[in-house]
Length: 361
Image (cartoon, rainbow, N blue to C red):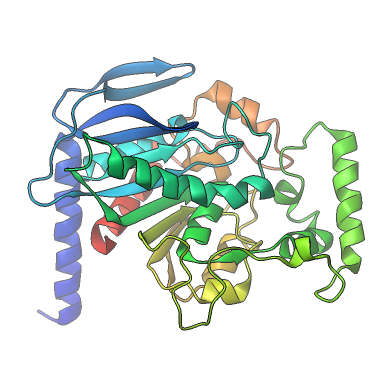
């Protein structure tokens, strides 16, 4: 058997083992607090899952069940960073998939950018979200029940949409307001879902934002204020040095990330394994400006899966119709689920994300 056939055989065996484990494991769920930061934990357990209804969402979980110790060693931790105005609930199917694959999953409800309070959504929360992730790891590391069970020294991060920006920062990428305003000054109509995000139905706010972007046409590296050119995110250091702001982050996975705000040179400096799952029919974050920008400049990044018919919010599950319609109504373009991207398609993509973490952590 050739080397390439050996590799394929190993991958097939790993995928089969992952699916066998997934079919038998139960999913536990509980919450912990770190100050004002609420963290949802999803993990393997032996307690049988039961339906749990939370608002419009119904989950199959064993609430407050004891976690199942790993057969050997400790379980790896994966932190999930939700999108703008999100929560742990719409990402539960992915969290449960990772738990069935043997991981402990922690889902922080980002301060100032969650379903109850999105007063700081956008650039202000992009600055603080990575700190929430680091604080989440710290909270797991001191939780009496999890300390003997979970490895917090090599941690995975998955982020969707604005959570994707969180993941890129933790991998070492840097973003600037200048990149954002210059992009929207030039491509506002094409990427209107990003540039006027959340402003559907707010005519005067749209006009004000458009005026700001028109003025930005005259900004450059030489005349832009320091607040525009300041870099946020990864460490500013020599190209030979590790740019991660938190060295515990070892592997990152992204779905439909905010990407255009990141500088090409900082994307090129990312060293750790980073994989993207993309949607070809994403009207909220146009792929050629966001996902493709990351893949073009990040040499350690790979395309894990691409789904030509999927939209932006098709990565959320469960995603009740009432919630989906409410959220879509706030979007300038796109937002409704695409029926041609099926539950089976989504689950296959989630299984690939779990396998990626299995291979890299």
